[in-house]
Length: 390
Image 1: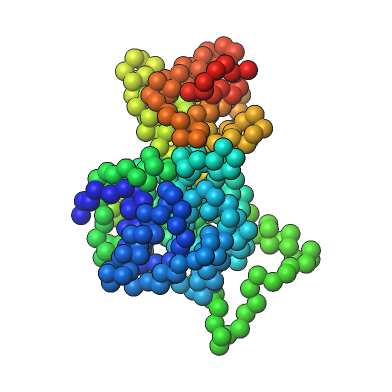
Image 2: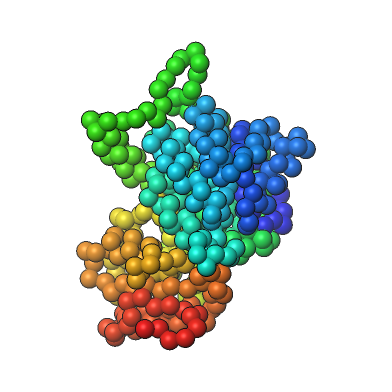
């Protein structure tokens, strides 16, 4: 059925359809709408789940870890400072192979704090061992919630997955969303079958202190599992498309890339603006393309290399910064494409919730086109910035 939903409510509907059984929660703007609606579903009898109000985000993730270790499907959600507060506990889920699913509604973090959109909160957690997916719109927010459980609970994976959605741009704006039938979701996503679970009748030791004799091998195994999860992501997206008629390309989506001479790589809602810019440029006879990056972890190193091999230049959009000249997406992309003789430039915008316009996107593509022609351009440019760039 079609419903008019914000992306926050779309995620909540996805969790309901996935039949999550334990939901630890702590409110924080702009995520609170998710857990509020889930609490209503449970109170009204529409969900058979345990809703656990936590005293902090650190506690919420601690509860999620315990619930998942107990063998039940688990969900939580957070934003910004909340994600930072649970940072310690983020590391418990991956190494213990616990497929917790969490929505992070992206919001700025730290000094010069605000409640508006940036990706610096989730980017800071990209090396914690969690898979990370960034969604573009409200429909993808619901669909990816269902796919997240299918990927995370795959026996080849058994890893936690973070769904990242842009605060306010998606969380508090509404759009038409196709909510699938429960029977179809049940067929696509069966009950969670843990590899192992805490059971008083069958005692186990989980998450002990690990000496150097074993720790390095455990890290290696985790790295290999993250690498192999790429195949599960592709398979799940393909199966979802066959079942529900909507596919998202798996790790990333290529848009008008078949004959593109230059392209921009973006993630989140910036992709919608970039897509409109590409369409305008194509009408003007320019061969511009777009890569919508969906997963920061696992990062699609090999797939991206194949997609960019015929380009003359590539730009990368960052809605966060490492405070080391470049953004984190740019450094990942440049690392993956180091063997190509390809000019790669970083383009930073939309920080602190600053508007990102079609005009900005046209500026970005103009700079990438200049780079493709061999002209010298800044390696890193900022857009919508007041004052002069040094």
